[in-house]
Length: 318
Length: 293
Image 1 (cartoon, each protein chain N blue to C red):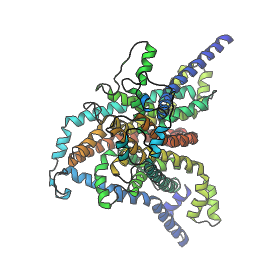
Image 2 (image 1 turned 60 degrees about the vertical axis):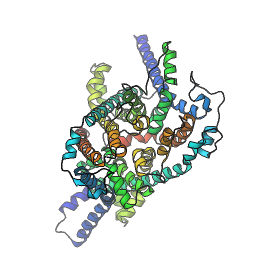
Image 3 (image 1 turned 120 degrees about the vertical axis):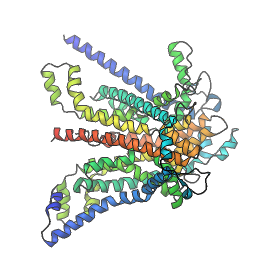
Image 4 (image 1 turned 90 degrees about the horizontal axis):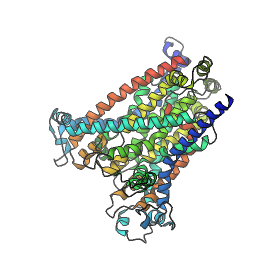
């Protein structure tokens, strides 16, 4: 803190302080430059190329990419009126909301049962974080081994319910996306669980004790004290999980490639298919731009919410 | 009254343990299944009723996948397969180097933010965009850009993009640890005549060591299991383990669950050990300053 103030007010001081200010300025540049350089070399040109392709129609069947014809906003028009993209967005949102809520409900529930010490805490905690450490593609294949029609999950369900149960987890167009959603929930519940258990454990005890002394029941303490205090952590858990779910690709692609039919064709799958299976590079680029803008808007909104929560917290704990 | 309270507690304990145990079964069963399958002979991969516990366990899946021993009649696809050791080497190299770079430069930047406000809080949040915008939207032009730079299908290419996409987590995570180091210690070092860099190297980074280790291992999990970028930015040379595993699915010889399982177990076990090792620190990485202690 001190140095920052020195830096801004140190204008007409001695030579020694001038060199010190200079050194600090140089130091600041050095700390940030690796990121800036890699960004400018690796990502910036790709972003520019993306923009180029969305305005110049090119597929791999047409000569060199730099000779492509300028088509203005045609591609964007095509993409924005494309029903397929609309459905892909709806599927992605369904998948992301569903898995986010699933992860949160299970993760929060487990955290509520576990945030106070009890016998076996360490064992359960360790076991519960393992799914998150499993490589997503492994989760996908394990899911497949468990869920095919004559597989162990249907076998277990049949035993439990005492009759033959044949859920077509993987080949039914109405169920496939939900099946991946269940895998996603299995895979990422630990994430919500870890955040929520840390949040619950760090809540100040005094307000809860005070409320109990004043005669509030457990439920009332939970809804009127713990839950409001937890709000920033809850919002964080929901937002991060939602954004990561929007980008989910390994499971859906390795199991379904968008099928059966087009029932698992989420945004990443559709962009992949357009670019690498139909070779419509420009259409894929325009689509990517639309999605990128959409995601940037979502992320900015998320950041706005997170910052508001964080500054509330900063006031609270000052 | 007293008895009533005790009963209540017992009911709660019963509820707690039964709920936790149900979830424990849901978590453990897939793990049990994939480990079990990796030891099953091929007749049991699809058997109905399913074989829960093999009476004739075999190591042939592991021998087959990891040592290239092929005594079963699936030779054709096995030859088209790369040896997973190469993929393991690629994965290890790419994940280790990109993670080291990310944590090192992330920590330096985090130090700059923590002590000199190099980035404002708004910029710190905007940094998250690098991670939060799905990589699929940029990977096509990136492939083209990489091929003109000669970075396609190279280790360096993957390392650079992993560095960039994991950096936000590295900065946020290390910052929460660096913030906790009292400034007086650094000032003391500077008064004794140490340069800025020497102070960072010999005072700050060692003090943040446990945090740096946790960050390193957390980011290693991300880079180790990354699939999309590895799939599209590599062709034959720099195939990583997740991509290698996905090749078994496309094989025309039918499903080879035992082999997949043997490879999958090999990929996953190191991460699980790492994760269990850093479990106490994981929460810090995700909390983005929202969890106070």
